[in-house]
Length: 470
Image (cartoon, rainbow, N blue to C red):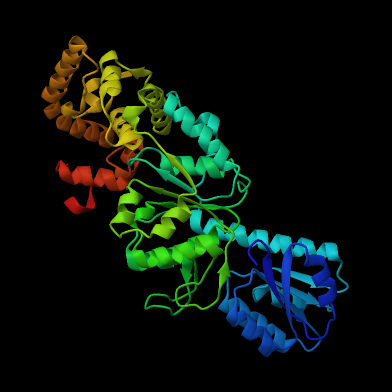
């Protein structure tokens, strides 16, 4: 059944089932039940994408069925069919959980339109429920900085992969851009109009990860006070990005393997089989081959996720990209906090280019963000980059250049002690300009109120007007 939406219909007397089945048979699979008992048994056994309920003149039992169905499966859209145009009936049905109301005689076009709209609204609800909204960037391969030969080759490969529907495994060190490029692939794929759902498997405790991925039924465990839709259901029709897939426990790997092979799963505490047409992009900074050899990662799962492999080079191995990335990040953070910094001093530029960036693009971004906050000049100075001296590397046999960099390192180290004083003075200045309102000062500094509160406590900054100092 994967690829076709499953629809359950209850209709005891209207005789419209044949027309509806004829309208939906090309894209949907319709299951018809003529008694409430059969309908409820089918609903308990399987997961459906949409439910059709026929209401006759004696509609009280069906209205009760509508309320029970919506309560049991609140994320499944319900469409009512009826021969009655009674306004009170329509209002009651919509208030009880129906998303549309069709009045006989119904045309095939009206049926198709109602079903398509209901499923689209369900998909949007899933995406909004998960994102609220994370995907505020329009990804474009042309916007990805790839000045090095290796990175250009990676982009060519990803462009080809984007046109397919196969599983992709992106490997590379932490901070190389795996998450960002997964989004680039999705938004350049045939699934671009469907949800793109991301989950970091390393950030969620093992006992909660199964529920996060596959959802849970009400009462399935102590705190499960309501049904929850998992990430795979939220991503139906689109793409799910599983970051740090190497961190998934051996037990969960079996369930994930089934999803990849059969496109189906059950929620935690449930017995309904849910079909999910989802494209999977996985990523890891670990050596999965070694994990397989050590018995930490299933061999069959490895071959299933490694259909289309791509490796992202570390930033130190794509040095032609470093300064273009630094310039792009500088513009981004200046725009975010309304600063007008034109670029980097010569010494700062040399330091950025010479550093080996063990944290890759993520470390580069954090370094430049901090420098933008601290810098008071029109150009970023070396001292405000605060790079560890030991991370500068010799380039070939050019010892003159290397010694120059070492002198820059020593200068940065000597001035390092003053950075703390500089930071405290910067915070005090911002607080004074914002009349000691921390929330406003945090916005001016480009940091979160929580981060500012931490630094205020760290430096022992006080003010008589603050509640905790009274």
